[in-house]
Amino acid sequence: MTITPLMPVYPRCGVRPVRGEGCYLISEDGGRYLDMAAGIAVNALGHGHPHLVQAIADQAATLMHVSNLYGSPQGEALAERIVAHSFADTVFFTNSGTEAVECAIKTARRYHYANGNPQRHTIITFNNAFHGRTMGAISATNQPKMRDGFEPLLPGFAYAPFNDLAAALALVDDHTAGFMVETIQGEGGVSVATPEFLQGLRQACDAHGLLLILDEVQCGYGRTGKMWAYEHYGIEPDIMSVAKGIGGGFPLGACLATEEAAKGMVIGTHGSTYGGNPLAMAAGQAVLDVMLADGFLDHVATMGERLRGALEQLIPNHDHVFEGVRGKGLMLGLKLKAGVEPREFVAHARDNHNLLLVAAGENVVRILPPLVIEDEHVAECIEKLSDAARVFAPASDD
Ligand SMILES: *Cc1c(COP(=O)(O)O)cnc(C)c1O
Image 1 (cartoon, rainbow, N blue to C red):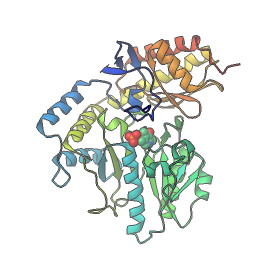
Image 2 (image 1 turned 45 degrees about the vertical axis):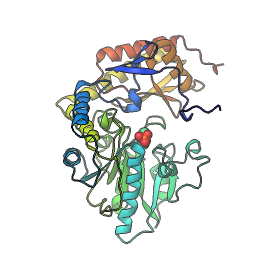
Image 3 (image 1 turned 135 degrees about the horizontal axis):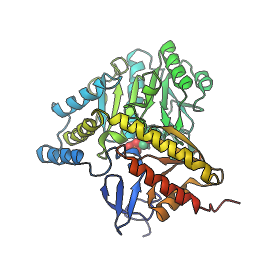
Image 4 (image 1 turned 90 degrees about the horizontal axis):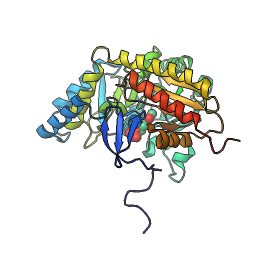
């Protein structure tokens, strides 16, 4: 038998973390890494944050799980808090980002069904989108690497180029339910939506009775220096998927919606055995305790500006490797020069400089630190990046 017990779907590297301390990961062999990947934007409070650890430990000892057949004081409390700090009127808790996306798709379809328009089922999504790995979520992207071999996919999706408002509007017809878009594309390459694009989609939704679904699984929850990335645009969605940072490392996601958009989601239409259990709710509360405290989001914005500024200064000294910086807050992308392979640079920074980064599309390396980073971590990151770039000779460079 050659297949590994752990299904071999990931290209796992040689680093094998066994412990985390703030912004650092410690591997099985004792190596210490500056973690500028944060579990792909998940460990918002870094590793081992005492408030989060305590909340999970206390809740585990008190009540870990009950089914959704019972009243949920824990779920009500977290949902109320999220509603109070967002556009939403109601929240469905999931265990992952892709399930939050599924719930968003179902909510949008049910809305039109409840309005007597079941033919309005098609959701327009965008090139390079990443919405997760369920059948619904892979149907919502046109990236072949995620879809190949899994056909037939779910019908009812159409695809337009990202940031191309005219192309998106040209796809609208009698079957359109709405648009689903990442406010900032993460896996796709830290591509930031333009204000004209998002505001134009919002206007089209208002004009034609369509729903705007934002996927803020990666860019939401404080990552950009505001609680939600849409706050940078002066618009609000009708439905939004969130996850990643929401549990600070505990598996948790949520689908947020307005009362109007959620009108079809009545008793029996959706569910999840684990979704919103007391343990997950305790993790979610602990994350919000920290994130909503005075000054936290300002700290994210300040650190984001400092890191970005430092990266911009670094680039001219290493312009054989780096081309530019993109993103918002602490969701940053370093665009590499054509011919420099992001995965190779990430491996080099990791193996030779103990710096953890994440590759993305469009020849970009993502920098997604814990939101609790301080100036010393920014300085260390820049030093390691500089050292890494200085000695980096891309194999494909000729
Ligand atoms: C990570 C991600 C998802 C999927 O989340 P999972 O927790 O892996 O299911 C969906 N949408 C976006 C924008 C993401 O970044």
